[in-house]
Image (cartoon, rainbow, N blue to C red; front, side, top):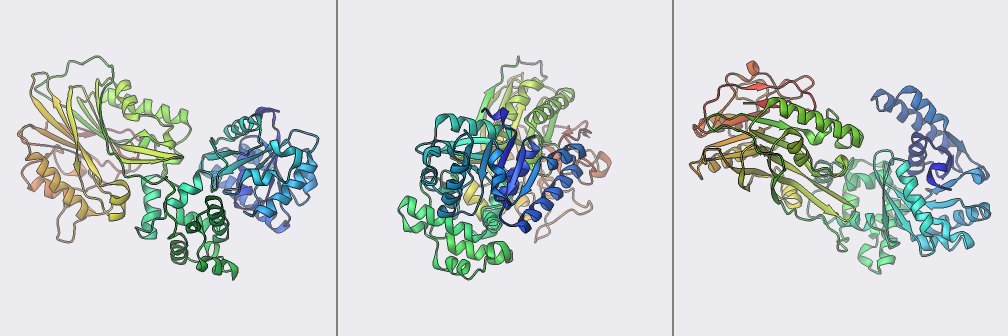
Length: 580
């Protein structure tokens, strides 16, 4: 039976994982039978489904009719015999090998005479070991590891045991895709890929809040690894860590006595206690863990300069127009990068942004928060796509974040699109707000690009994206920008998302010594804003839906005289583009 022929799946367990799997299947148009031995747990699962579907309707992710249809596809039962008519089964019981083997022995007997696939959502236990309980059905046992929370996380690890048939693996991949997930095939090794890399993050070199903050802000994870431990429970962490220790024959992966005592005393603080307690407990529990070859790598911070194949344009030497636009990863007005819509919707949004660039007709475009390879945008090199679609022959790109793990990678940063030839590009170090961010991702950097005008004279363009949280960090960045002006006599334009208010405007921040970023730049005498009056008179740039602040600026050295500045009304991002 192919994935397209599957009409009903059975899900064993109605907790966080089992309930999520049933919900995702139903949303994808597949019937789901949720089995659990506890009627109370099933009732909780049903109420949660209703709540989540109502929220999806409220956020316009689905219509009321679609939500009602999805809920009708889910059946809840305490009788395992109700699973004898399903086309596929996913087990999501407690992370315990003996319990799973007992369940699979029952399933193998129930489906001895058909080809129903018996999948397990285990996050660490060997598929080959589970299959030993299934006799002749061992070739139909496969790992189908969803990630928590299931409705949000796109990844599914597909794990083949020693006896799993190739056909079953390919059917599992196809079903995962039908359910809207991204399947990756992993070997049947202790912890598979995700958990061995997941626990390698816990190096103990930063505060718990910093670890989770880095993975949420830098990689746009819905939650950090410590918060995820809170979510899944320390009892599950103990099971996973013991599997890693046994499978890798290395006791440094063994759960520490403190963690086991907490679980043994049924003080399951990962599900019950406050965030501070979970952070401390997890820090102790995971302090002994270190990498198995996988690690959050220090970014290469590479700069790329390319010709796009677009024919050169007739740009002038005596005038220059510059556009600055923080495109927010092409997610539109969504708050999370993962909520930016389907691949088709994201591509349509990129096309719309390209139309804005074409209509503006700027000679140089500075882009912030542009993806070069990110899972939420489908690995699209947005800078190159926009340069080609908007008619720019030259593009320079710089990665402010470059994370490479075996199952996950993120690359995004700044870009400069130009009608003029790009003769060189380099990075200018800017400070990071917190040391942990600098350790994991390197310091935040600006992109300095050397351009050549049609008359052969050089100019420089500085793509700026300053820290969003701390004025002192932004002021230090401003001083480094001023220093860059002094390196050469060539004219310089600095543009982008400065995350800084005009001095004297409402809410304009200052650092501990009373300095303001924009005021620091202006008073240096090196740079002048293209804004031709108070920020309020020219229009605000953020947030784009109801703008109340001017965060996006174009500055230039005294070689230039601003003749116009305007904010373009184009809410394709949370920032509005500015043209000077």
